Length: 595
Image (cartoon, rainbow, N blue to C red):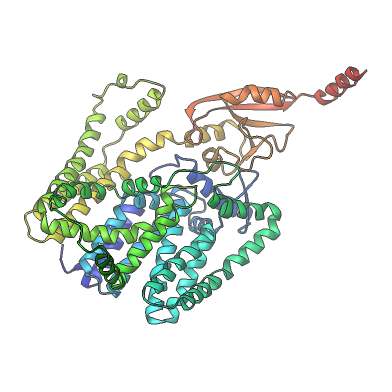
């Protein structure tokens, strides 16, 4: 690879190509296998089915918990295929990731960052575990993060150049972030830029009013939607907004929402930057050999640090302020999830790239050892798949309550066809290993670092294209939904009963995956009380249903020996019908009891 790659458009083209190959290519290979993805996809599905693009009803009773920008993107992508699929539902996240990486790359070149460092930062961002996982998921978080990160970069470009197009794009990006997950999408990037302005010597009120003006401009489009949604859904919508934005931040929601201590965010950053955190661990054994001692004059040392901090380049200072402030901000609310920290990754990846280049240039043995570890993992993947394919792994090795599921995973891998895709991905792995072996003999540290990223790319390609789809598709409820669709009349509404929901509870659980694959036909029974129809229900809900709804006669059609990927229930399909005269008989009994 040409070491001059970042000094021309080739770096941009290579990052675009690598993004498409590693993120977009295998989007549709895995079925929905968690409740989160179909929960978002069904909102876009309900938009297309009902024609309501403001606040559609899904799962029979719900309005979307998040603003609609991400769902609009999914629905627009699905218009080209005629239906919402796994590929079209995940495509907006993938495009947002690639756009974020390319924007960061262009911003670095604009600020005279070494093109090789900019390119390596982009590769690390693309292959960081958390970013890679989120970029291939139908969730709002990657879209939100990409819009926020791009808004920070363009806001800074406007601050430096006062270009009107930079300001307009900043406002549009912040509006999109607001419409993706609420006010935090517009407020947090402006907070970052406000602190940056203060560090650069801007007066407080000047920086404050600049940021407030941008935030207010970014609220215009979102407020139009909020008003339209309020007209359509009324007070229920207002309470949902209050709950999702205020109560979630303060930890006072009526249900627990991913509550965790601040250390949780530290751990998720460590795991989220895998496999590069392994390189950092490897390097510590060498770097920490050097002896460090505290300065004699602590006050003077602190003053020197502050002076160097304020004297940082634009890229260094903006990346540091962005990474630290966003991380600290998400440590404040009680609700914490790893995907909340996604905006940190592009900024932190810049410093990780610098560190990897520095260590590789001075302690080449660290990069070599790390490269051999990645090479071993990359080679083991196709070999292990081939071994499992031969059937030499006995099913009896699995024990416990999850034994049946693990055996199903093993059988799926055993029946995996060895086709052209497996051969091509194996060749890519061998080429990546070969590139690393040749790169470690060269004196250029940058080429060796790129070979390490190439190994990570090859591992992800084998996992995403071959291994994970075979495993994750076993978990999916797709086959249950397909069988239900075969057993009942076409277009018939399907009812659902859950004993874990009580009247007044706002966080109602649904069979999101089954509902998506049945085209949003599943509706809670307890809120409608139909005369007859078809119903799905978990094994543990049967007794509660008979007690709560004795007026229904149940006929079992099919029990599915599959643990739902949404809630681990085993579902049973019933035909039900209200018993004729049941209510009248109850009234007669009550009247006689009163006498």
